[in-house]
Amino acid sequence: MRKKALVVKVKPSKNRIIESIIVLISEADRLKKSASQYDLVKSVFLADRRHLNEYGRPITFDHYVAMAHGPVPSTTYDILKGDPKRHNYPWSRNKAEQSIFNYSNHTRDYDCNVLSPSDVEFLEEAFITVKSLGFSQIRKLTHEDPAYVDAWEEDSTRSAFDISYAMLFDVPNPEKARDIAFASENI
Image (cartoon, rainbow, N blue to C red; front, side):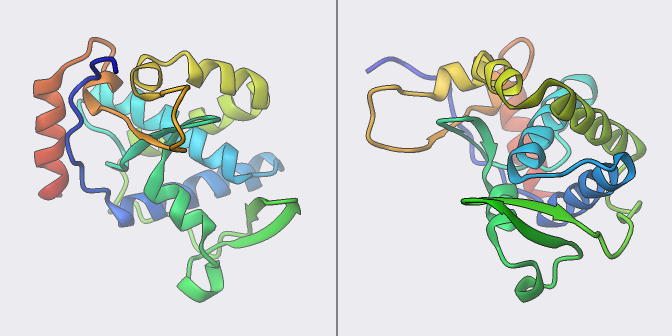
C-alpha cells in the first residue's frame, strides 16, 4: 500500500453548501442550461479548489472523496440526493435518466450574508467551465487533479477514498490543511 497525504477532518458548512447550490442552479437557469448532480458537484469542486488557492479558504468547507468519476464534495452530494420537498430545500429536482437528476427552479436568491462576492463569482465561473467542457473533459480534468490521484485506489473494493485538503493546494501544504480544518470548526 502506498503512502498517501495526510487527511484532516474538515467540518462542512451546510449553510454555505446550500447557498452554493442555489448560486449554481440560478446560473444554470440564467444560461438556460440543465444542472445535473454531476454538473453541480464538479462545479463545487472546481470553485472550492480555486478559491482555496486564491484566497486561502474553500467556499463550502466540504469533505472531498475520490470516487469513480472523480472528486466529489460528499455533503453537497448527500444534499443533492435528498428530496428537496422533504428537506425544504429551495429548488426542484427532476429525474433526467436512470439515476441522474436535474435541478432547477430555485425559489429564492442566495444569501449574500453567507457567500462573498468571490464565492459567487468562482461558483458561476466553475459552472460555465463544467458546462463548456462537458462530461468526458471534466472527468479527465478532475481525474488528473493531484488530490484525486493521491486518494484514488484502483484495486480496492471501496467506492470512495478521503481526499487530503493538503493536496488541494497548488503546492501541497499539510500545515495550511490543518488551518482549514480549524477554520471549518469556527465559521
